[in-house]
Image (tube, rainbow, N blue to C red):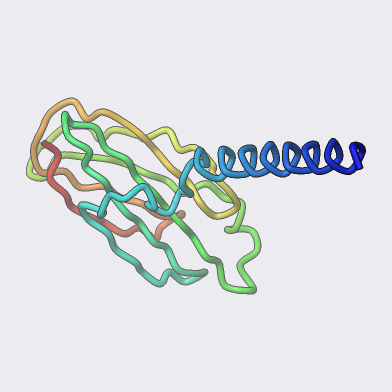
Length: 142
């Protein structure tokens, strides 16, 4: 009888420990790179290129901080573009200055993210693409 009580107490303790561990892991998971952090994108666009579809989302986070999220879904016959890094360039609209290249972080296959602080607030345009095919998206950085 006493062994059963001790075994039951140990079983409840193990279940509680595992439950707390699983709850902590699930609660602290970082959201995916798809903008699931609760923010709505400031600007977004999707365009069909010759080798696949390119989706771009821009998040103006305030204080000139910007997060750029890129997803490229290549067509079945465009295998080489699936691993190629897109070219990204930020420039101010109606300003004659050199653009800002953005360091991209590979999140997973075909998904990139960039976090940067722009030098000044205002209307910006970001060009994203591969080779000769680019798409533009404008947004306000505050």
